[in-house]
Length: 276
Image 1 (cartoon, helix red, strand yellow):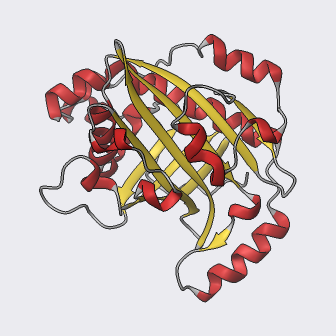
Image 2: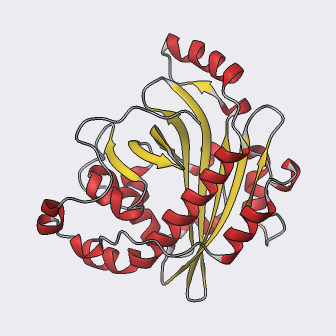
């Protein structure tokens, strides 16, 4: 994975001014909990056969079924891409809280840093959400421009949140945010009109909270030009030839997602109560 250049004034962590002035400062916690045992086991196992992690075309069937596929692991694909799956237990969290979070955090770097204090640097909306929008309506259809470290690489991404149906996700449970939600997005490069993958975070209520099943499909056939920009198609053609994602990239995505989602679960019920 290729890193981006740092932008002056953007940095990891909060400043003393942030700690003194942000209304949500009590939720700043730069210490991450250790990785869950099943995450460590997946990293120890290493890459698995690609068929164990369903491609995007089969994702809906596996996502809404009883557990029958590999829940946490990573694989490389023959076209130079990767697939990654992560299961995160989220005690005390409801699916509606996750929808609230994705709409709330994207307008300020300090909010974004709460989520992963050791990797998140900056976030802004490409176009602000409509005034008064709530829940899914606040982020679906929006693009979040983010600076974050994936492993040791600083990446500047364009995360375009799309309706679940666009990725083939339809299920009766999604009609009730108390029961389930699914956050879907096209993953792109912010500095070039090129998209490189997809993500989905399916959150379903379970006794005592929720569980999140995250999936990433990146590289290979998922690289494409963005919009009608003529440079996008050319850039995508180059990227398909040159961007070969590695096992190290897959590991970095798995660890990053596991860390940020488990950290989020530690404070989400309380911050949602205070600001939601």
